[in-house]
Image 1 (cartoon, rainbow, N blue to C red):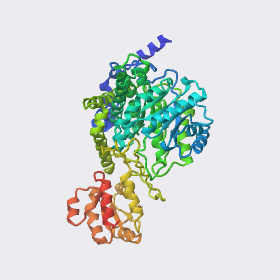
Image 2: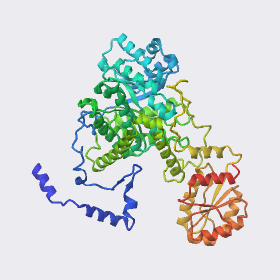
Image 3: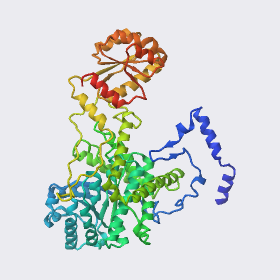
Length: 619
């Protein structure tokens, strides 16, 4: 069989790089190769449309195996199993327990309990975990940072009372005081002193982790992939340094750190991020200890809220599904899929069921849990992993030069970078350089909010008191769609919904294309758009527009024909509605001289323009 394969391949000559490039150039038909084919990532590097074997042969970990140091291909060699996790807010322990038992029968095998610090007691824990087999379910707990030690002691006492096998208890405590500095601007430095005792209290539980790196908060604030990765590494290294300096062995310290990483919508980049994260963390831990097992990075993935929307919210399921696929193929230990309705309400039972089933679909129908690092060996993914790792490592080293992540966070440099990125992404969304389906691109023309309003973040003072409270810089976790949603909600509150009428005339292909563009452009503000097949004259089109109660008339034609149609239409309308030209024709100066001032096309700032139109319409 080997001989037959050799004979088969001997009949073919492998195309050279130049031959591939020449073929692409032919197919591009004169279009610029660099503009059309090269992916210029937000991470600061570019990716070619194709790679060859020689491009990856010299990469440092291309021959690594699953389950082996530096774990770029995953922590496990046998399968790609992960825990399906759902978080529960525990206002009442009995109700939370009932919900937990219910969802455990619906595919969940990892629970996250958000516990009010004021309710902590042995009786509360006993009620909360009643009927839950702690050796069979991953258990994760979150409470006020200053009460995390109390919670750990209660859990340790509960596990002891049940006589459980300590090696089978799996889960975590979300102890991450540094998160409050980054997200809330609260100085929680004194709370860090609890870290040593937290680790020592649970040291006999090898699979229970007490220290969290909540880098998903950065993803939810708009961070690019290399940023949340680089900062997550520095964040974790800060805890390694804190623990080892406090007398905790490096092996025990590394074993206790859990990374809660966010997953955004850049599909291949996020797969590469998870692979690069394990590789880089293994290198960091190896500087503390020679124990290879301790160098494994333990990851819980959270699909992001940053790109979720209020309008056309069912599209959120598509976004979170691709994110969940990235997380699964990237190899994580557990995953939380954010329900599609999270931006505007406490998730309903239906939304939570869909979120669970999104993971179960990947397991039971796609079999992603059976395939170990399917991305391994892909020239593109291997190259992307290495390039992303290089960028994240540069950021990590920059933070270390500032004195470590804690120092950088207290100085506000981390928050400044994330906020600048968030602002830049909002600006790009306003200009439609970053698309959000259903928001600034292809909005649902007839949808209304039906009373939906953005969920406001609570004012969380967890981890602070009067002695430690201070005003440090914090990140701004505003969703990418929030500006457009605010605009659209404002339009809905107006006494009259503005009507935008498409005056289509002239060249058939151009008028249809521009009418479609204009409808999408203006519907993003919540305007009622009226498209048309075409009019024989501008006068007839204007008359029909006024009959329809148009507040905005958009003339849609070809660039050449605007010189003929635009000014007569503008004069015939005579100020009875706002007049807009769809496009940027060569005769724009002539049109402006005639008094036409509104033009919409791909280069204008959509959000700014729509806000100006609302002002002109008295909204």
